[in-house]
Length: 315
View: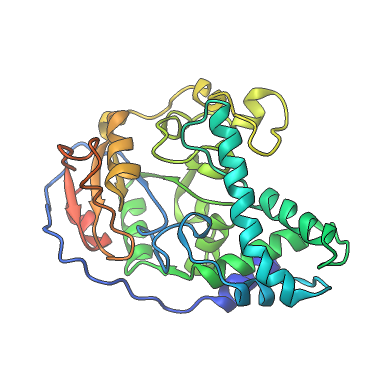
């Protein structure tokens, strides 16, 4: 993964959050033992406000450059122009198939999506045949970093270090892709586990093939990966059959605080399992109040902060 980490570092540059002016709720939260975080818009400033495949604007030039750097050959200009459209179509196809099979909030595994897109471009004669799996991963990272630049939220590392040193259990429940943990490692300078995030407390949507606001992502904490629990390899959108939820929950939700920037995906979903909640309102790009969503109209988070380090004074 070293080349991928190097690409992320090369393509990343400081990105400042945009103040939101949100009213804060700096409540003291007693009895917290575990703190779970969202990533995009919470631990990371996100140029698009979310993980790129979900929210970023596509760019033909970004794809052309990504194809070049990743080592693909062919009519790269035409491939770059057509590729974003094929990418969206493949994601929509995946989502549609998953919904038809009972997944309300499907998630893609982006390297598989890119594999399909590249196969289509090869069939059209725009790219020379190439099935190198490492190149697919490289392309996904190169494109994501170009269309959705990211950078650590101010004092994110200091906040994590403070909470870890004080004995809090740390975890992540995030809509994410395979490159998301790599972004944390590249931009924070150390892997997630070395930062203090427990592996069993980290859940990423691409592994479960479902995204927040699916409550099942929280249920999967402490369990094995869905693919292992199903006893077979999943294919594309194949439903995880809520397998991960059967792994056994090792978290006391009443002593767990979830921190995220989206009132629906983060606050509402975490509240459904009994977490206490903190809305992070630190960046206008990513703050999602969801005021028109009926699930959020009467929803009140336990705390509202606009700077991560405020958490250290509340727990």
